[in-house]
Picture 1 (cartoon, rainbow, N blue to C red):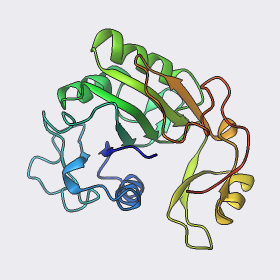
Picture 2: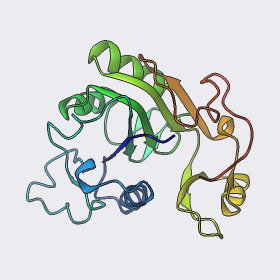
Picture 3: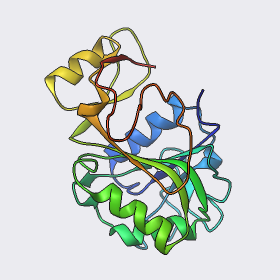
Length: 213
């Protein structure tokens, strides 16, 4: 079982690394352009010059995320740290999602470094539900620095921690255990995660190395 709908939000379309990851996700999940969005933190895109560079995406609008529901996965791509995404405060990001029409989503996945290493996901989840009324099943983020890799056997691009062990496994069509790579936080609604064998519970993630899918 996979998510029925996928969405991408690129928070830094002027950054070549963020664009590359957004593009990789777009083609890996076969996401149509009308579900790939970018957003600027200021007026640098006032003439619309970024659209052709931002992973074949379109500007975020008040209806961009209105079609998302509990069968949807929203991937937010940006640089990050333990305290949250770079260049934008947690509350500002949450309000941005609401202003883009988000009312419900199954999973919010941060494609960023270090954002799963502290309590950002817990605070973000609480703010989404309590302050903005956005229902969400799960939030997920990486615990460390990440990069994109392709296995020597041609498996589609995947995210890897920048560790010798995880890079080695990715190049041989496997990855390190989820408990070592990611943090998963339960949201305010019940959503069955696709491939729930992988995520046995948010408190005890799978500690086995798995093949890439």
